[in-house]
Picture (cartoon, rainbow, N blue to C red):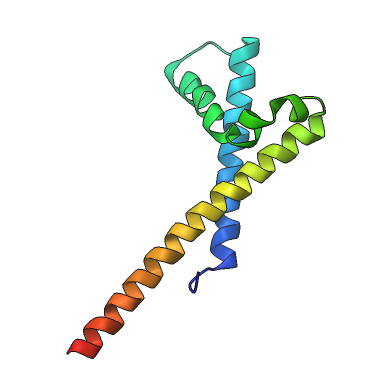
Length: 107
């Protein structure tokens, strides 16, 4: 967590949030039959179930009762995925930094 960057977290949150929104609209349009079904739309619609995990998978009865709770759950999922992405990036950066320092000491 030494290399955790809030700006990278924010960028990851924006990207994941945008993908969640796109997949939500694809899911809604597929469900309502607004557009002609094609492979791209079906793929985005199916990806929406990934972006719903974990809050909507475990707490759908609670989150489904109010619209604002439903979208708050999606925001929480986006923040969770952004945190996981940033945690992976910061762990990789820390690993590389420690590896360089170790190689420098051994030389």
